[in-house]
Structures are given as structure tokens and as C-alpha cells.
Image 1 (cartoon, one colour):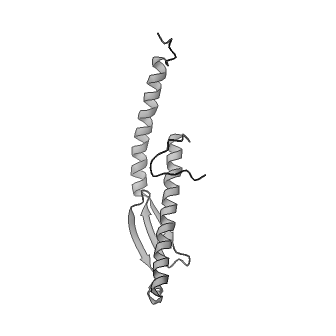
Image 2: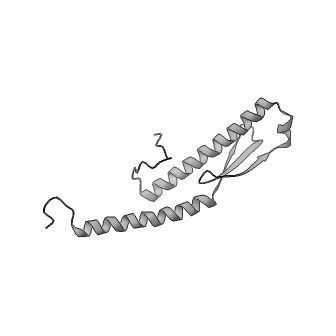
Image 3: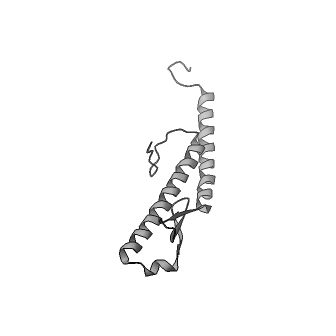
Length: 115
């Protein structure tokens, strides 16, 4: 009785299998993103910030010469390094999610399509 425009049972089963596979792959991706380190630097490379693939702050490296600069330079250098690291991490996560979903547009929270 698949008459009323409903998919047959085989199609439903296949859809559930695909959903389960995506869920398993998403868990693997989460673990992979946790282990990735993504770097961001200010323009002259003297301030560096590392984030995980999930945007968790990991560490900071500061060249000694930065401490001779004024407060405004320091604030800008740190902000720039953080912004670059975040952008790199977000782009990496978006690319990994597109690989996982086969390019499906799932409109996931926190991942904006800026194209």
C-alpha cells in the first residue's frame, strides 16, 4: 500500500542507514577536530594563537620584541591573531562538514555559508 505518495519501506530503511552513517561520521569528525591545531598570526608574525578545530583555545606564542610596543599595538596584534585563527578554524570545520554531508546544505548552527 505504498499508493498515497509515500516512499516504499526500502527507501525509508536506506534513509535511516544513511542518517546513522552520517551520525557515526560526525562523531569521528568531532574527535578529529578536537585533535587538530590551527594557527593564526598577526601581520608581522610576532603574535601567534592556536585553536583546536572546534575553536578551543590551545596556546599563545609571543615574540619578546612585542613587549617593547605600545598598548594599542599589543591589543591589535592579539586581536588579529585570534581572528585569523578563528577564521582558519571555522573554514576548516565548514570544509570537513561539507565532506561529511556530501555537500548537502544542512544549515547547521554556528556554520554560516558566506558564498
